[in-house]
Amino acid sequence: MPEKKQVPIAEGLFTWPSDDPRLIGSRCKNCGEVTFPAQKSCPACCLEDVDNIELAKRGKLWTWTVQGFPPKSPPYAKKETPETFVPYGVGYIELPGQVRVESRLTENDPARLRIGQDMELVIEKFMDNDQGDEVMIFAFKPVDSGS
Ligand SMILES: [Zn+2]
Figure 1 (cartoon, protein in one colour):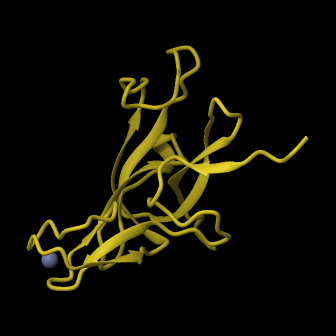
Figure 2 (tube, rainbow, N blue to C red):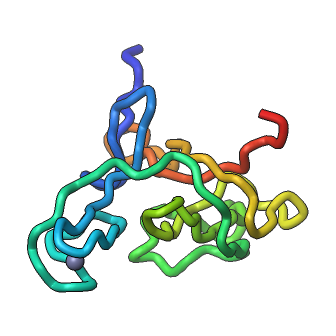
C-alpha cells in the first residue's frame, strides 16, 4: 500500500513538507509589525509592504485553556461526536520579538501546562480526509525541562 499523503490543513500556514517546519508569518517593511497568519497588508500601519517570514520555532506559553467539548462545525473541520471528542489544549504562544500565535497544544492535562513555560512547534496529524490523506496541523508542545 502506498504511503499516505500528508497534506497541510491550509496552504501558507507553515512550511510543509519539511524536516524543520516553521510557521509562516509576515513582517511589515515599514513598521516591523509581525502577523500570523501572513497578511498582505500591515494591520498596524495599513501599508501593503510586507515580507513573508518563517517564525521562531520556540516561544513561551502566554495563556491557555482546555477545550472540553467539540467546537461548532463548521468552521471546525473535524467530524466528531461528544463520544469521540478528546479535549485538547489551546493557547497563545509568545514568539520572542515576533507575535503571539493562537495554537492547539499537544498537552491537554492542566497539571502539565503553566504560563511562561517553553513551547516548541510540532506538525501533527489532525484527521484523515475523504481522499484518505492525512491532514496535518500545527501545534505547540511543552519543551521538557532539561532538554
Ligand atoms: Zn506596518
